[in-house]
Structure formats: C-alpha cells, structure tokens
Length: 239
Ligand code: C5P
Image 1 (cartoon, rainbow, N blue to C red):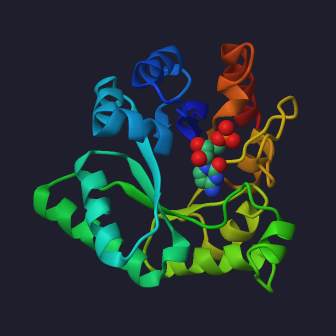
Image 2 (cartoon, protein in one colour):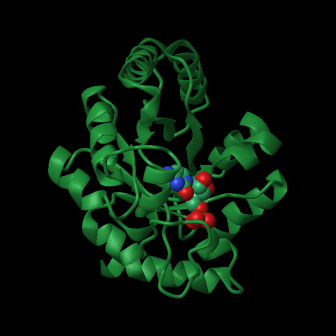
C-alpha cells in the first residue's frame, strides 16, 4: 500500500472552510481525512460530502458509545453519508457492536451501498497505565483490557480496532492479518507528545503492524506542515 493510503490526516479544526483548504493542500499526500467531533459539530454532514466531492475518503471519528438501538441508527446514517470508515467504542458492548455491524451489512446489500469499515475504539491513546488503574479503577493491565475489547470487537464481526502503537503487535498476533488496526497517538521523534500518553513514531507503529496511522498535530501544528507530512510519509515508506 502506498504511504498516502496508510496515512489518515485528522482535520481537527472548527472551521469547515479551513478544513477544505487543508484537504486541497495535502491531497497529494493523503487519501483519507478524519472528521472528528469538532469539525462535525461545526460543519455537519455537509463537510463530509464536500470532502468526498474532492475525491477523498472520510473516516468519521464520532466514537459512538450508546445503547444498541441508537448506535445502529447512527451507524446507518454514517453509512448513507458514504464514509469509508467510522468508529464506535468497544466498551459499548458486544451486543451494540454486533447489531451495528449486522444492520450496516444488511442495509448496504438492500440499498446497494458501499459498506464502510467499522472499527472499535479500545482504550484511548491519551490514557496512561497509571490513570487506567488509579482513576478508572481497573485491577488488570491496560494491555489486557485492550486485548479483551479487541476480542469482543473481533467476535462481533467488526473490521478492526483503534489502538495505540504499543498494543498493535499484540493485536496483530492474536487476531491475524485481516483485522484492521488504526493507530492514533502518532508522534515522530521531532514532535512533542501533547496529551498523548501512549504515543509512537510513524515508523514503529507501521513496523508493529498498524494498517493506518492517524496524524493530527504532528502535521497541522508544525511551523512547516508540508515538510512535516513529507517527513512522516518518508517514515511510513521506510517502514
Ligand atoms: O493531534 P493528534 O495526532 O494527537 O490527534 C489524534 C487524533 O486521533 C485526534 O483527532 C483524536 O480525536 C483521535 N483519536 C485518538 N485516540 C483514539 C481515537 C482517536 O487520539 N483512541
């Protein structure tokens, strides 16, 4: 897969016009752009359509976490919007994930729609092992939890998971090649970690087995974003 297929650029901005400028500016480097909460709340479904009209794919990162009925209906809305991938929280439970997946498959067949990939968020990359135990109150390790949630997502028939670079090889070894792993919390050696506690470089994450890496501030907060994306793409290539 070429580097631009593996690199997902997070459009973490609040201005739809600015988001489209970024899409135009980085279109040669990136095939898929991520629309998260901030941009979706300001641009709505229209911003997704406008990115797609420019020939780009959209990963809709709204991290659904609700009762099965609500997640099923939201998943169908995301599917009809034509996104190439969307996510939900694995901690929403097996039933929620399975029903969402089944409903999407059935609707795509019935309405002749392309089927988006559905991936489950395991444990956010901003959470440290210490916070996981002390504040969230879990007795087992964060790794064990990520493995357990990945296994639930796998059994529910989801396409894959969102997980930090630190858990990628464990997930790859447990669930095999076809299970998609999307890795955010990407930080080249020259960029600060910000709020990401389980960060990893692009090269290491890809070497560990990530299918896609999500990059936001390591490009958009740099003095020279073009140089940053070029360096990251080279890292992906060299992995
Ligand atoms: O700027 P940075 O590269 O840290 O941004 C990471 C992006 O990935 C953000 O848009 C964030 O919402 C998203 N994300 C994440 N951790 C997850 C899932 C998504 O950081 N587990």
